Image (cartoon, rainbow, N blue to C red; front, top):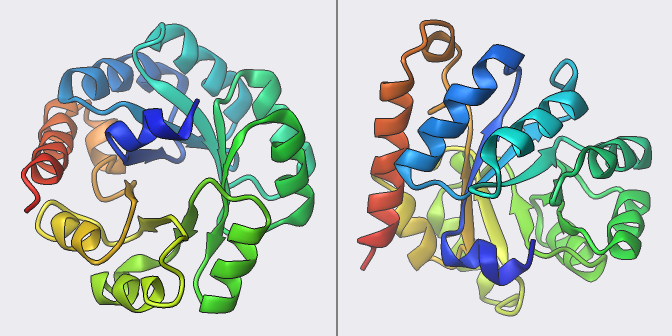
Length: 209
């Protein structure tokens, strides 16, 4: 994946704890709802196999990566499974070096100004500011003051009501997870509800002022 491809629709879906039987309907739901980019977290049981299956099911219609990558070993497993990018809740220098060598986009997590700068210097495609929901969009405006060159991805607390504000305050991208991919909706096969929430996010992004 090239960073510009992601920037065309900078919304990332996060799947954690998904099962094999949910892969196909989730893929179709995401495609029909307009989502382009999604990750499966590596702390999901059988994550590499699920990533492979999702790539097969998507057949080029989605860009699929790996999330919650905490070690070089996990990064290697994700790459072997076909992951197009790597996301982490923190900065692991070994993972950063691995992604650089393998030419994989890396989205490490950070929160404080020092952490954010360190992650960017380590080669982040964007720095995932997590948890964004506790600090809100205004935090991004503050960070972008001294670090206007750093690309930030808001993760946590993003919804259709505030997505526009996150972008107006300086976020380059946003991510969502359990607020849309709710366990009960997946369990109940309520994929229409999931699709409706994704559509709301996509439309709110497209209509941002």
